Length: 165
Length: 106
Image 1 (cartoon, rainbow over the protein chains, first blue to last red):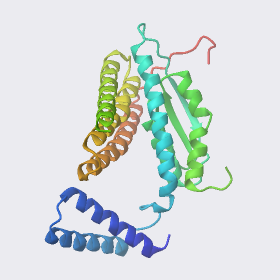
Image 2 (spheres, rainbow over the protein chains, first blue to last red; image 1 turned 90 degrees about the horizontal axis):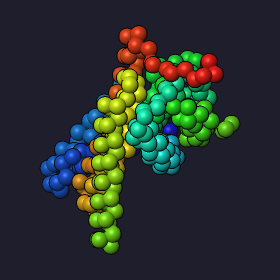
Image 3 (cartoon, one colour; image 1 turned 180 degrees about the horizontal axis):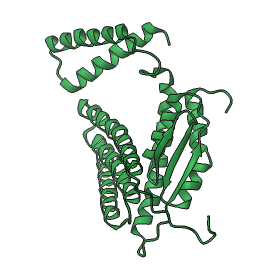
Image 4 (cartoon, rainbow over the protein chains, first blue to last red; image 1 turned 60 degrees about the horizontal axis):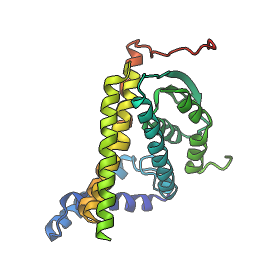
């Protein structure tokens, strides 16, 4: 992304955050918000920490579609784990296994590991970015199979904009 | 319209509270620390988000609902990182997950 677009986006996000937390339309507060957001953004640019990785606005439109899909998955597997909890003779058979990811970037790998943890029924325990390998604890065979089908991995590849899906 | 939105928000609040209750039951019933984490992750994703969405529908689109969206995003990100840190600390402490073997002998 162009660094001016990143600058403007970061400024806008910080000012929106300021406005939301104050919630008042007083000129002095708004002016202070503009000054402080501008100072913080300038300082970030000076430190060179304002780049595509710290502010991934390039993938935001695709990320919203991905979040809706992820939320559907979260609800479905919540219902699955709830059924497992409420079954009267408690019958869980946890699995502990490794899974390979096809992500190319560190950010895609990070999103993948976080999405696994967010979905109830699977937890990413140990991650290895060099080998792109995650050790996973799953609560049952079904959640393990759902993860090994690789649907989530492919969705995140699409989200990150990799062409060879 | 007002009646429909109040019914929808009440339904979401009730379902979210049910998920919280089920998660709390699971925290007691599950055998070891990793399976208990699975039960807790129901509470912090499905339970919390359904309650917050219900509250957003209840208040309508105001500054308060945007604040609620920020709270929901913060809960999602913080809880997943905290769960990962907890699980990794357990492995680091040589607490092996209690994996029940199937009869096929894998």
